[in-house]
Amino acid sequence: MTQQEAFEILKTGADVFLTGEPGSGKTHLVNRYVAYLRERSIAPAITASTGIAATHIGGMTIHSWSGIGIKSGLTRHDLRAIEGNKRAARRIANARVLIIDEVSMLSAQTLDMVDAVCRAVRGSQEPFGGMQVILVGDFFQLPPIVRRNEDPDARLAFANTAASGAQFAYESAAWRALVPTVCYLSEQYRQEDAAFLEILSALRAGSLDDGHKSKLLERGARLGTVHDGITKLFSHNSDVDRVNERELAKLAGEEHVFKMESRGQPKLVEQLKRGCLSPETLRLKVGAKVMFTKNSIEGKYANGTTGTVVGFRHDDGLPVVATRAGRSIIAEPDDWKVEIELQTLAAVTQIPLRLAWAITVHKSQGMSLDAAAIDLSAAFEYGQGYVALSRLRTLAGLHLLGLNERALEVHPDILAKDAAFRAVSDEALLKFRGMDFKKIEDMQRQFIRACGGNIEPSATPYAAMPVKPPKPNTYLETLALVKNGKTVFEIAAARSFTEGTIIAHLEKLQMRGDLPPPAPAHIARGSIEENEMRDIHAAMRELGAIPLKPVFDHFDGRIPYDILRLARLTFEK
Image (tube, rainbow, N blue to C red; front, side, top):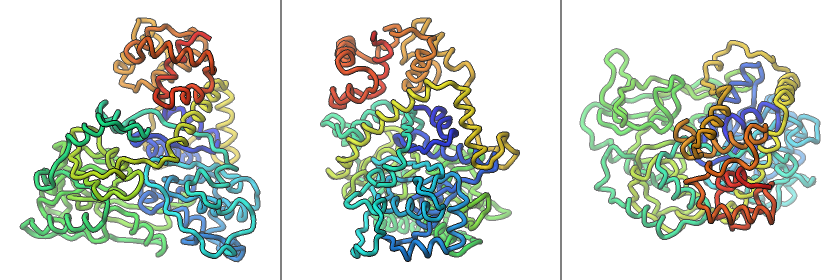
């Protein structure tokens, strides 16, 4: 599913699980939807499972927002106390849209607790009290830390709270009641290397073979031989602190100190400080290896952009950073905020930099790196290796300092669930594409009205956020290239799209009747071998082509969904 298609679904007010591989643009799409709502005077509740994730999207932790705090269970007394907390009760009652980022790190028990609080405060037995809920994340990344409640009487008596024995959010009673539409993003904006993408896909699918491992091991390196300008990723904080402090001490010259400033509600300020990747006290010298810790609104840098401090501006002492790409950037102070109902409740201001000779794998989530030296010899959790490796754009940027077997493992339960998510997303997309566009627009307008918003956008600061509407004739451009005998691979290259996007265009064209079923066989040339195509079509004749999951299972997951979709286009029913 493309970002644009998922965006149109979000605008209908549907409850959504937004997922996809690292680099597929989940955070960009969330920010775009937030801007869309705010332009129409609707204030979404923006939350995340961790403080770091919350600072990335300008929100607060779901624990703080819902009033559950650090509780691992809820008593009826707890629930009454939250209902009596005017601030928490007001923001829950007034919310029309609830966004929960990094839901993969949220336990099933916690999601059930949030659901219970929302139902109680809003006086509704609909899931989460009837608001639109958008769950965002990728379950192949770091899993939740589950705290078991030792006192069974400290749980509410009704069944939708604390799914016993469940670990992941999708196992919760709240998720089952919500039944979110799965939007599995298929485009890739980070990895630029086909061979590296193949390794990451194999790691994600649990099918990493000796050839893939050999390619990784070929990138082996020793710490002493890695260029100083390359960021090191470690599993543990102690290794990171040791490297950064040692390297800064080696530099001669004056140390420049930048103190974080704060304002607003003390508890929220503390949350921002804990989640902010820039430290409260930032110490820099000329020659310091640094990393930007958030995205620039003007596009000057991104979260993860690395460089070296080459000086300090004369008039105000701000650091001047030379990036690896050769640009010179003045690192000016920036804000991290918690905003509720279009009001800023707390904010911290700091130079958006941190020392970056080393960082932890955990803190690297959400970043895109050109190069990194990665030590996975002490990896101890499912997903750590995948998170670390998927930060990189190319295999050439990898300097592998160490590796253990756990680093190359993903959670076995997630393998099967991910295939199910992909299949459900495919079915949702087919259903959505089959709807009349006018009906979709009506649904979108009705949702805005139901939220008390304005149909026409107002001129707000959020309107400046870049939005990428599709070209009106984008499908016809693809169709013209098909008629000229081009393959999906050639069309994708010519139009600077992914093959998955071009396949989506062809599916839309076929449903509209602009492309005959079956589509011309030449579109699959170079993507699917003739014998493989025959096997897929034989399976489709036996099992059906809609949905694709039975066919995917028939081949034991060896054939990606995009290949099956392409084969379905040329399948003669």
